[in-house]
Length: 197
Image (cartoon, rainbow, N blue to C red; front, top):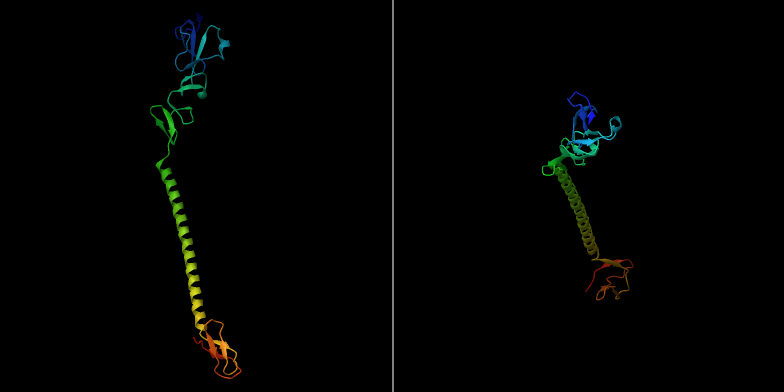
C-alpha cells in the first residue's frame, strides 16, 4: 500500500479518486475506477506506477473514456438530436421517453404556413389560367363577329354591278354560270343592271 495523506483518515491507498480540479478526493482498495470515472494516465508520473488514478467524467456523461463531453460513452440526462449528451432537448426537438433521445419535430404552425403558401400559389395559378382563357375567348368571338359583318356587307354590295354598255340587242353574259345580263340602252356610259335568272 502507498502512503497518501491523513485528511480522510487513509495512510495507505491502491486507487486514488480525484476531484474535478485534480485534487485528491478519497482512496479505495479496488483498483477499478467507480462509475462515472475514468482511469487517468496523464498525471501518472506524479504518483507511483502501482497507483490507479481515477478522474471524474464530464457532468453530462453517464460513463466515459476520457475528459470532455466528446468522450462520453453514455449520457447522464438526454441524447441531443446531433448525438451529443445534453441537459435537455433543444427547441424543435422532443424527447423519446423509451430511447431517451431527442428527435426533430415539425411544429403545426410551420406546417400550416407551408400549406397556406402552397394553396395560395395554386389559387394564383388557377386564376391566371382562367384569365388567359377568357381573353382568348373574347378575341375569338370578336374575330367571328367581324368576319360575319364583312360577309353581310359584301352580300349587300353584290346585288348590283356596273358593266360597260354593249350594242343594242346584245346580251352581256355574266361570269356566273346560269346567269346573264340584258342591256337596256345605247348609252356609252356604264349602266346598272340586275341579275336575271
